[in-house]
Image (cartoon, rainbow, N blue to C red; front, top):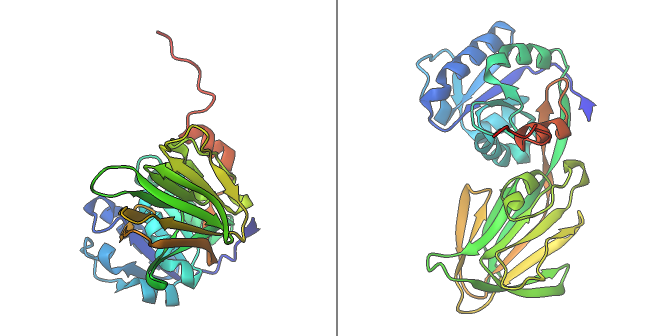
Length: 296
């Protein structure tokens, strides 16, 4: 990880979508950054909950073109949403945790101004995270595309029955499967949905992607970890409808014989970590490793 240039002339502030709960945090951050000599842009949806009209609002395209830093107030979902939209612009992000678990949002709300001071002084560290790029092909033509920082999930549709599909990697047939679906995860997403489906935890420095079956109808089905350059294709069998989810924030309804193509995106997400950040310390805290057993 590399030390960041502290000269952030323009800072974007993004809150949990139209949430009044984060309005006070956004207001305090905007005032502090303005007093420090930075230009402040408030994301349009976030600006709707602020009564302070001294700060300019902007959509994500304008934020991406002008901001040198994005500060996201909310939980991991808010940060992931902002990361997906800002990825093409390579704007670094820091998360203020007002959510519950916070694998990605490192800074506590109670210490956010002190953290901003350390950030401006160049004490935060930058870490690059892999982003997936997924597209849906129908009769050979692209009908949908999206990014995913955590995962792309193929799941059974409204009928609630198992689906059947085949998986290919770099054009080579891997297997056909009957199951509730499939999780294709980044290392970042290995501690999200993939973890609940018994997928491995993969350190984010490794890159690549994970294939994790969802309730497969075969005891021999196991997660697979692919390399950085792999191209994964999932083809839904005829007479099976399903749904593709992208970070749980977008979805697309798949039809029989549709093909979902997933590869590493040329874009990456830059996360900013405060002094003392440790990936393994974060895992110990969030997953409650090493806790003493409770007395009965």
